[in-house]
Length: 458
Image (cartoon, rainbow, N blue to C red):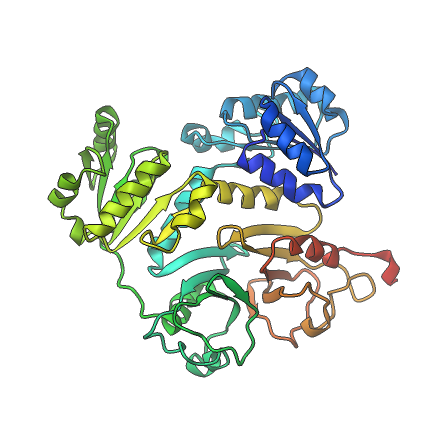
């Protein structure tokens, strides 16, 4: 497949790195020669320095016979124009654009179609981040929740603590503790080292555990690994931009919400739009302001400005002054592993969310979703099974008979609306949606090939 990627920032370069090893013809366009030289030295791909939406640049990149164009520059407008030109002049079949501006996203049904702006898929990082945060608020104590199959199934990441009934016991005891609930532990990270779980594996306090279950059973399974946190009541949001204001709007009818915005004009607009949120003008790293607003009573402190350093510093201060939990937004990947799991409870990366969404759209074959887990260390894939026993390596076979990559685990099978937590004897049927955990995202390529139909089986 020939893929043109516009923008060699983190999202574009990571996507190129992931796709170049899959026999794709990748062309990466950017106007920064240093970025391009660095990527060209590391990977077998073509790079072009030029203007992103220039017809000449796209022609030089081979847009005439491209299968896919991915526009992830820093400008929404450039991304949209590039997709328009790719469609009008070169008839590129599939166009994907990253769109950050909430005004465009709100009008996406009317804007993004072949009669107006011919973009087949838009990726809105702010919406992805907001949805991640809302899930974490709904399930206090979870570190990450990733949903599959129209939200029927979830992979949940939690830390095991003393007091959880399963802590100190083998994984096999989970079925005894929850006899009427199907769930499976698909991975354990102990001191950042991956452990492939067996029934005899003992859950230890401090383990980072990934489990899969029907979404409706998340709380019951979490309760086996830790004492469940009380539901949040008081939430403080730092940053009144698109993410902060949208979160406040979604939360204000169920929680006591305060939002701190340093820009007086924006704070005034927020106060007009939000009916049940207390809007404060000020600096969230102002200790006196946090004391005045009783930071010690805040259950959840959310720092979601566009400034990484401001988010980190205000969250550290809030935690020191008594906020029970802090979640922050981090743009720079270098910061993620430094801060996650320390004083700061959870760091969310818009770039990781973008890369996961891109990976889902650009995969050929029957992959429905690719998700990044544990800040990109691990992953999960939802893939549909096609064919029959003569044409497929998976259909009609028990899971124990399928040659999965080492460490990959089939967690669940969704058959229609039925969620089946996978066991070794589970038989894959045609049109099943199969959710597979991988402790190395490079294994997704092998899984994709495993599910492809082949005439050599006939």
